[in-house]
Image 1 (cartoon, rainbow, N blue to C red):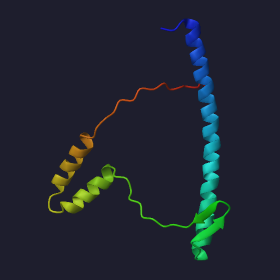
Image 2: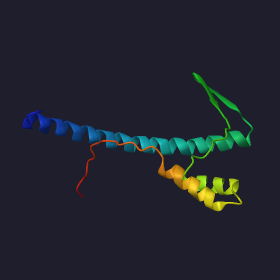
Image 3: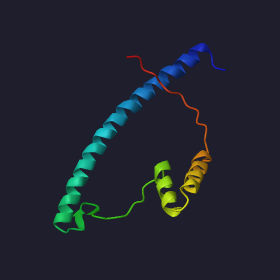
Length: 117
């Protein structure tokens, strides 16, 4: 067990790191938003001009298309099962409920900071 002074120092360092992380996350968000906007612009330009590749220093920018499946949530699962069990919507509801109720749960322990306003 730490002494009171050691505990206070740990808390101060934790708060300092929390503040730094918060600042860095805001900067990351700004950069990601700007990159997303530039990406949309590049995709539009490359698609319009039928360009697959831009050669740049140290590599290339490639235009790629890929299919991505949406994540499965309760609504998606219910819709798919209702389609599958057209003649028996009750079964679709029961299976959906069973799957949603029996998902593995994890316990996550953490420290959260509440900032007074």
